[in-house]
Image (cartoon, rainbow, N blue to C red; front, side, top):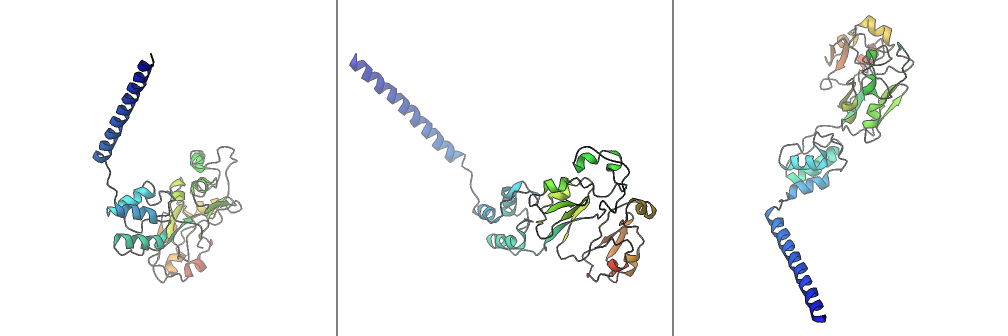
Length: 266
């Protein structure tokens, strides 16, 4: 009886050991056969990136961008959060020169605050700009092109760089990393990325004619063209009944701001 028990234990041990050995060998062979080669440059680039995984670069997170840079499918300074400093570091890893693209920040093309923008009706509903865009005229404000002020951009920003102040979204220029999340979140396409060094901006994107804009908002662009006519650098164009600055031509002289009768140029 005792010998049988010992034999049984030894047999069971041998079976378990054999199975374990087989599994170990199988996993070892599988690891060799299906081994994924790690690109050292890709790993180095990934370590150099800030790790926010915001997607502002257009790739699925920092690992996606690192892979694209390593393959030459994305520029070394593609990370908007890391900026020029990270771009230079990655350029050294890749053995190339980083092109200076300049820092950018988000800008909200509207200053139609609660006091300046007229409203057509009272709204009591979802506090989300994307949902409000489906109600009549895209919201209670008379200007259907203005900031709804319900903070979809605020919730989308991973850097706490944008807040709704007096009914209008306002960007903290120093905190903004130009990731583009707020740009994507705005259903009215009011937010754009502009050069950090830009001295003046047109804070209106209304496509209504002047008389209609005047009735809707005290600070709406009426396309009077005074800014365009007086700009010595030909840096202002009028499109869809509102002014737009060409930052490549703008010298920051400030004449447009002085001439604007509606004070919509900041």
